Image (cartoon, rainbow, N blue to C red):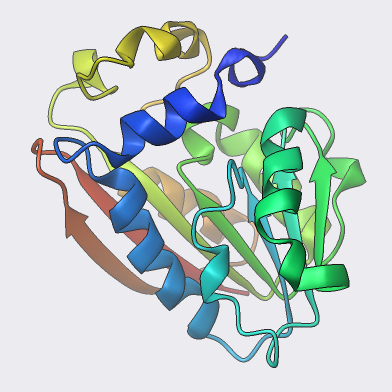
Length: 205
C-alpha cells in the first residue's frame, strides 16, 4: 500500500494549515493563478487531496476538471465538497507511479507537491499521457533535507512517506521537462514561515 493511502485527510489538512506551516493557504492562492493563467478549457489536478483550490475554477471557462489521487477517501471528500461543480468535476483513483496509462487528456496539468512522491521518470510518463499543452508544478524547496516535513503535532502521520520521498531541485525539474519537449514559461516563489519555500514552475509544449 502506498503511504498516502494511510494518511487521514484531517491530519493532512490540519498539518498543512497550521500557521507555522501555512502551506494549505499558500497553495490555495497559487492555485488561483494556475487555473486563471492560460487559455484552456480542461485541466487535470495530480494529487488533488481534499480539493484545496478548486473553488477558484471558473465554471464558465472550464468544461472539465479531473481530480487524480491515490487515496479513495480523499476523492470521496472532493466529490462531496465540490458537488456544485456537477459533471465538470470527475475524480479518478490513479497511482501515478505505475498507472499513467489510465490518465485522461487535458489542456493543463496542475501538479502541486506531487513530483516529490512519484519521482521524475513516472512524472514524465504521466505528462506525456495527458498530452497537456501547459504544465504548472509547485515543488517545496527545503532548507534542511533531514526535516523536509515541517514540525507539527501531526508530524508522525507522515512517517511512512520517507520511503517514497524524492528531494526536489528546480534545475532537475526543468531539465526533466525539457527532455519531453516542454519549455519553462515562468517561475513564482512563495516563502513559508518555517524557512522553506514553494516554487511554481510553469511549462509549455
